[in-house]
Length: 455
Image (cartoon, rainbow, N blue to C red; front, side, top):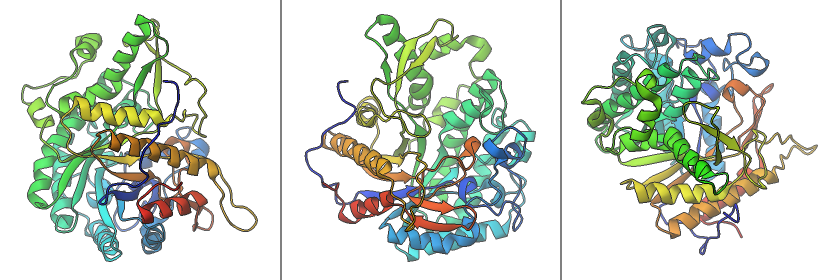
């Protein structure tokens, strides 16, 4: 890898390429106790002292629940033809299952209708981490009954919105839900049990597989997929030990999800490493359910992993090395557009994918308004330009990439980091809720309008 960048040959994207931006319900909606919404694990977690920076919560966030009309106008100004949103499970089913909150469904009715009136195609994610707290109290994602609750939730939402929604994503980043929520404890619900984490990831994948036919039944004209956060794993050196470590890390982060989704079951090398004390409990039929065919794969890409062998890190024996010469975002993540190119080509080479979408890609920078109110954020613009160049090169070399969603439409509650990290192409003044399109957003709007990279 001599360069972090990849060269494309033609600046124009395919004629039907999707240009969008993405958000998640808990990060932007606010209205945490309005109109019958129930408590989520992120409400409980963020209100627990010491869990988020500055004790920040999503109680108000970007107040999108009340300002959605203005936000759709922003999307129009940005020339977006698609918007990836998520549904708040506890806003629809406050008790996790059973009782339906009509006010919550009515909000999403209005939002979907507003998007369609603005000629913006909604892409709906059912689960972006806001599990109803009552289901966590009953065992959370390690409990197989939570998969049944998810299917009920998917049924309720798709029966209501399925006549208008044509693109469904079951889960967002099950690695984060399982590992960060149940192993490291960095995310809600904040548990630290490695066996629970692996079991949670398994139940999440079962929930996905069970929900796919329900979505197809209730929304027969729609396409259904899942979104994974994936990262290419490069050996830190050419040593055999580091190459083997990179393969193990790839299993931990990528193959653990890709393999079962495409009919291969869990990677045998990882099952051997985890052993019976950690590996999830499975039934013979689970893998047929998980491998239920889908119409597309969503990929969230931010940064690569350069991996070294670390005997002290059991059971995987992996350590993460600095990316040579890489610039860093405010998250401390290395900027490496070549990783996106390599990832897209690897996925379509190794798995029978028919369509790929970049469902998240973006960078956190703390760029403040100037005296004239403009938000100059050239680092973010360059980040997008370099990654879109990598995406275009991957298309030219055979990747079936059909669309790109910038993360994020607007600055928002960045999970455990609270409001200290800004990913948006729209600036949000949290005190006034005033929105201002950043210069990166204006650049992105020109790219979307022209369907081509700007020279």
